Image 1 (cartoon, helix red, strand yellow):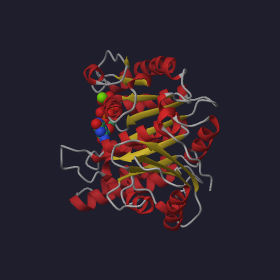
Image 2 (tube, rainbow, N blue to C red):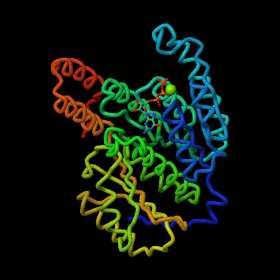
Image 3 (cartoon, helix red, strand yellow):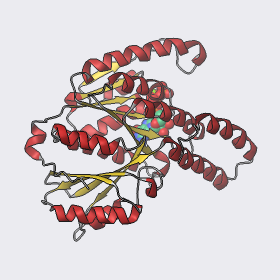
Image 4 (cartoon, protein in one colour):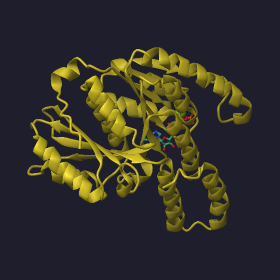
Length: 354
Ligand SMILES: Nc1nc2c(ncn2[C@@H]2O[C@H](COP(=O)(O)OP(=O)(O)OP(=O)(O)O)[C@@H](O)[C@H]2O)c(=O)[nH]1
Ligand SMILES: [Mg+2]
């Protein structure tokens, strides 16, 4: 267990590592604004979109408009080549911002046009051996059935382009009927802020450790929990694990990144107890890094579970689609089979699944 105490406030004011955050498409712009509202500094943030209205509402300091002269939905096939050129040029414009950073976080929603097509290109162009890229991606709601399949393909490209992809599945939103709060927005925004805080406060060596834990596999999930009076760090970690951002099996996690935010100073022993709880629930040893950020706000924990392969996500997502059809009693059970099997096989690379 390697445990680095990363502290905190004055280092955040003068970050040792510079972190850029790029929000792509409608979801990406919204989630980025949410993260800025939650405390991420807007100065190293870049919003990218084909939608001028959404872009103008973004809180990011830097904005890149992608000009799609032909309606993207009306003539999709005809405009495809044109789109590709637009997205390539967007990626080029984004790197003029990310080139000055040590680390890039790309935030997007998969399943639509803009984010699914351009975010992987932006990630790939921003990533170099010394400049890692981690993405935070929202996967469509259960009722956006076809979009979930498109998202899966986008996810594959994202995984190839990034050092780690953190999956926020809108399908696990527990408050989806409430329009007032969207849990997944909160989760994604906390994930972006926590990563930014962990990395901005890290020394070069610690950043390498953080990256090593993140890149244990293709995918990661994130869990949050706000501590109540009497909660210990250990019990909070157990609570947080109940609401992961995507339906991936806990037992396949290989690494964990734990961030505590709040007014208390936690001891190494408390982090060690939290680690013990994690190991007993996961059932094997994990690579582990923890950090803490001093703030006057309510204490909370943010836990990233890493080390999942892309194949693990396929299982989780297909289950979800089938569950949806069973629940709503769709007549065309056969349609699902003919639709899902070829896609599934197409994405399934031998040995990649465990
Ligand atoms: N959590 C969350 N998910 C969102 C939000 N907006 C969109 N999504 C999800 O992200 C998916 C992609 O949607 P958009 O981001 O609007 O699509 P886009 O990338 O702008 O692509 P086009 O508009 O089709 O060019 C949707 O299917 C939604 O499930 C948001 O504000 N929060
Ligand atoms: Mg859009």
